[in-house]
Length: 290
Length: 197
Image (tube, rainbow over all chains, first blue to last red; front, side, top):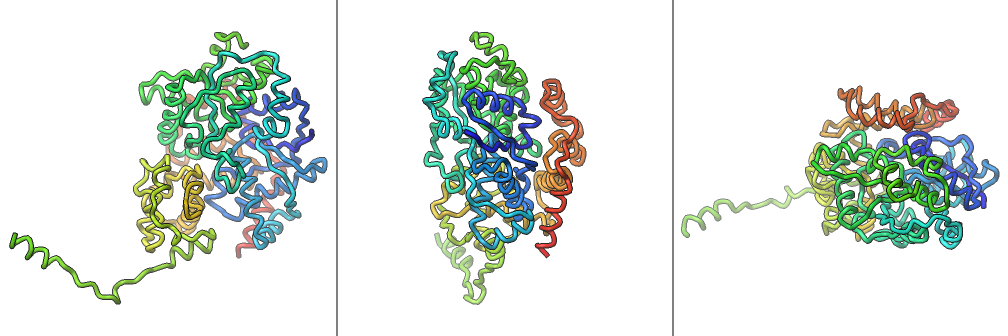
């Protein structure tokens, strides 16, 4: 299977381990990822609240580059924000007037037959849970994981097309296929405040604390995520949360691709897990997963 | 008893029908820019109940919809409400009237930024301007530069310094931006500007 790959800006910088683990896991599953030619930023958090036309034109330009990347028709994005912006653009571009304007802006023909996938869709639906299960060499038994989806992987369903958007279970099935236990918890689609990470950090700390508290009280040892912004907040800001709220969180946060990589027998170091800021290395050592 | 009833009689007002006016121009402006009809809202409060950020807001999203219906522009635009929306899409997902509330709020933010309406805006206009400028000239976001310039311009140069150092140590922050065919994005922005005129 060959797919166009849209890593997005975060995966080239603050969440480089998501990029590394995604590529490694896909290679192990026989999925060939080809980076979208000359991709640009999707407009992420600012475009849709600043410039409506550009918020559609930026992702549209990337979608228009997909067929120019080895003639592909499917593109996958590991970042939930990129995924959402690409999907929103597709939805909005059903309007012919807007499409005309956007085509003028991007100076390319907009292709309306591109399939946009989140990386979780790729491994659970395109490759399939069964295939993943067959490839598991190191069972993650004993690991209790809270699967965290955040906002944009499932919401709004009109855009994502997801049937289970309040209580998704895709990641749970995946984690269980790897041998780990997926705990039942409440905050799986609660917002971490991602868009405010830099501007209003207090909001982020408050919301993220709620997520960490619920995961802990549901008996999870670790949280699994599929979004670089969720990861940055949950993993990177635990020290700040602990000092602000006098808590003692030491919850390791893994990308689902990292958990997959570990189960598929790839070394933690090769997956980039050692780049995490909270407790990942010690945690894996204790469980003999390194 | 007597005093109370007298008071009540005094407080009673007679409202003249010609004084009851509804200014729909704000709602129309929102509809024109977003395609969303705020008059569909019947105040069920589902958006307010699900909003993770409501505790930080001056008004709830439900109240915001009402302000938009009644043309109460100042209540909607000069309070912090629209600037505390985290764009999590919960309200838009749950609205029984299928109003994309997050899109309405985005539209109010765009109006607020264009008209330069002063409010407790959470530095978001600055954040937006910096990031969009980065896309325009570099094609991609440059995280280290974004954090540094945002903190600098908002007068908190040392904010998140410890976190930044830790990230740098782990190789999670690129120090130099990558320029990806910047002329392509600059042309896109200038074509969009021409189109809007």
